[in-house]
Image (cartoon, rainbow, N blue to C red; front, top):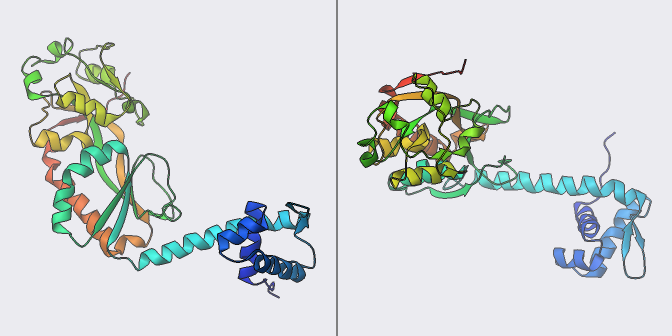
Length: 312
């Protein structure tokens, strides 16, 4: 026999009072009078057959039954709110909220957005740059672009191009360091975000892959890949550039790669959304646009020697 649940309005009143530990503050949140809120809670207690609060002079405390109910009530209303937002989003075919890491947003998405906006003026894009793991339903996000292991039965995942790293620099600097041997004397930029890749693919690994073992130690260090690349664009030095973040600058000549040997990182970015949502109009056109944009610079990788290098 199914459990006869109390009215939702009474549970909502209890949840607000349990969170605030105040009938007055709970009434303010729900935009009702304290008397109306107190009536709802009393009706809930009658339904249960036990008190949920100890009424003190100027405060309230949860009883044992109130404690047992409060956590589940809070979680239940959170789940309902999440489900309601998800249902609302299915009716919106224009707004698209995307989250991606700061470097990917700055170096891959931002320089290309004019083309997307011109081709799809009906889509209103919103971006949330960040690296923390997100719950797409709870956080009201349509698409996430994330690097690394993205396996989840709840997600639609489209793997994007394989990532690699190789030395890139401003054209003027390339003229001064035309050989791998001369590169040992070049000003080196360190992108410490490479330390978080699945494989170790720093400067020592690249030089060893080229048959010229060398471990550079001096030069500016950056925790963010886009900052390291900005320094390279300004002519500060040579940096190991990641595919997704440098292909546009390489294609348009702002950066050059005099030594076309790259090391695979063992990972790639993926396009993620809640399974079943990939067919929504704004998500589908954004996904297809990303794939098309990647294909525009595929020739950069075609002209490389790509090594799956491991230090012996």
